[in-house]
Length: 363
Ligand code: GN1
Ligand code: MG
Image 1: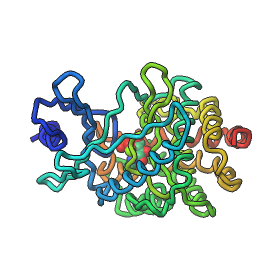
Image 2: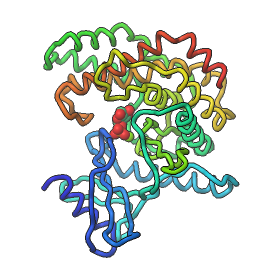
Image 3: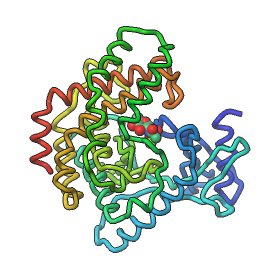
């Protein structure tokens, strides 16, 4: 049975009437398998069905517990707010038996979330107005969770964004002997990491406060209202856990300020766009500026430099390990993805002075 057929069967656990369902793959996620399910009758329910990747998330139940804690907190905060428009997060859709998830015969973990209609996602940012919407979405998310105790959330993915641990794993992969072809691109990538070893420890070496983070606030996890173009929702909440706001800001900027996209075919053209960066930071600080401390602001440049480097290192390591973590469409894709992120990091480095100044003016 292929994934679509399995999804079709599992989807029935989340509906009470066993009518005809349409099940289609959804989105561009690199880890979980995601489907959009629609019931046949007009105006019938639509929802998002996901199989959680167990190799990445060893304890999917913890993800659902975190999601419940997060949603309860945010709903309570929003109930007390007088905003007409506010950031939306997807709801959990229980199975018809009332459970929050379904475990299939293979032991795979499935869960369903509400589908947020009339919205669009983008994998490349169009303009500064869209960038402001992204900044608003991340800032509002941090503001809404700023009074949620990070200790009330599980660490669903230990080591995620702990860059020195990614470096150690990379070193182990290299020490095991390089089993992929040693092209000029691979040599370049290995040297690129080697030349930047001290950078990987900068955030972990600083004394920065743990807060609630999204963990994966890349551009296509922001949903834009299809009519107004305003940011409507933030999705993909599996990596919500305790962490540094730096991981989120760095990741959001590496995703949005690279206007060639993560899948750029020619890494040489990749640039870090300062106008987009400015628009995101200004809108972010308008929402979330109040609670960030001076030391957190000080380390923002380091985060903007580190996050593309870290993701590049993760892609490169996966290439060396045989593409076991990120889904690939062709052999060598993880190396190409790494080169794009490294070029982006290089572009950040070459604009360090301007970026520091921009952070200082916006924060
Ligand atoms: C993965 O599955 P997806 O696309 O939401 C990854 C992120 C990366 C991203 C790069 C749990 O997210 O860390 O930034 O790919 N998620 C995990 O596109 O590793
Ligand atoms: Mg994700």
